[in-house]
Image (cartoon, rainbow, N blue to C red; front, side, top):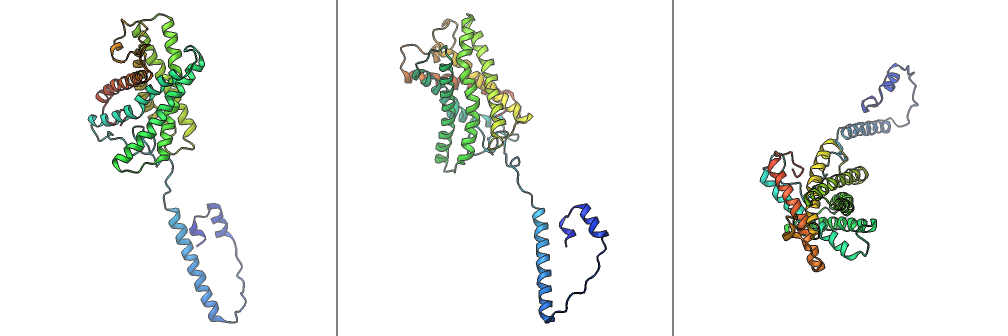
Length: 315
């Protein structure tokens, strides 16, 4: 029985080669009672061995096996279920999660950035302004994701895993801090060179893509050890993260068009999302949210159409 419980190989050899001298046990006063005790002891040993063997054969789920997607058990589009596209879905299935992302994160991100810029008294060229607006945008993503998940759960009468929802929101908000804080300094630098609107548009797209991706990868390294919903960095989720970052970069590029004062004749989105000095705070925030939602929507639509099924980050 002892050898059957997977004892180390060296110990088995010692036990098999050892010479054990038999000992004469003392004669019991009550042979019947001794027989009963022997039977009970043997039954107990057999049950213990069977229990140890069955326990050793049970697969214990690890943190890694609990994951349903590169984003962990909670997909960024919703904390309620894995995405609806997937390797066995169709390209049309991608547009549902795309709308979810726009409503829960992209519109709140632009809205919150503009709101923070309206509240702060800092100079737009200062580090304080960049930090305030970046944190405001990240707050919009964090709150938008959590609130949208709660509302979606109430409408579908589905329970919401708040731990996974908050952890996924924290992952995305960390990436947003980097892109949100970078946006104003990047735009200021490009506009100071008197570049055409299209150059500022493209430069902001590139810079904020890498800024968001940097924040996302750092967040994976920091959070994956303690957050079940955040998968540790891998090659596969590295590709997914960068594809997502490209669409976020598009949102920041369209946000450049809200500045109606810079080369208005070249701004092809001026009449759609341009913010003037006479606009109210609420109108400015709505236009800012519309610009980021529009930028992400255009880029993600192209991704949804061009990427093979199972290869796009939303899958």
